[in-house]
Image (cartoon, helix red, strand yellow):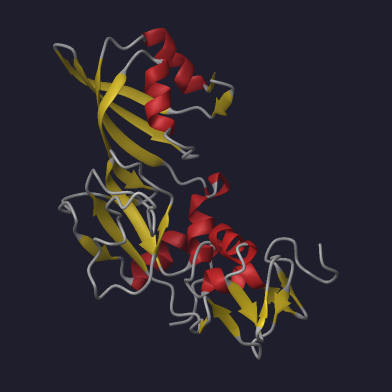
Length: 256
């Protein structure tokens, strides 16, 4: 760690970590910013970076792909009802449709808080603040992601109980999940699942472990934010007072 830098915030008397500055400006998440730096897409005062181990000060000029980044904007958050068939990525080498290509044109550059796989649908949180995305994705924040899944097969109650206690699947350890069977009709089962980590395809893998093959997966809540009556493809901004209330003292919003 750089001398004088706070391990918690990345701030030093000599500035802030470059990846944090890029994230706060809404360029990408901190992890995404680090990948951009390693790819040689970021320069400071005309010098291309290849490592994120650099602190920058407000007087320095930061460019991404040759274009100066804007000043950090006020923190904003949107609720988006992601339809199935869209990738949660800014670009796809295979040319498949993405979430960000289908957002309203009036939205500023945003990043997603977590992801939904191409076949999943429901609530996706979007923000212009990469640091907020990092904060809300962290299991330490404690926000539960809630899903409803339609699945084929006979649910194995013993294995469902394993999911409630935490389980290892294919060498990956999953934290305890809330799992409740909502209804059954013929070979179809609707089941509610709540998780706090959001690992890759976590809900699908957990239910497969319980003998169920997911045919539809809908995220209905992320922490205090609900999908509610939001239509597919619809975007709604969270008001600043509500955002401030829900985040509490755990996260300081960028000034309006």
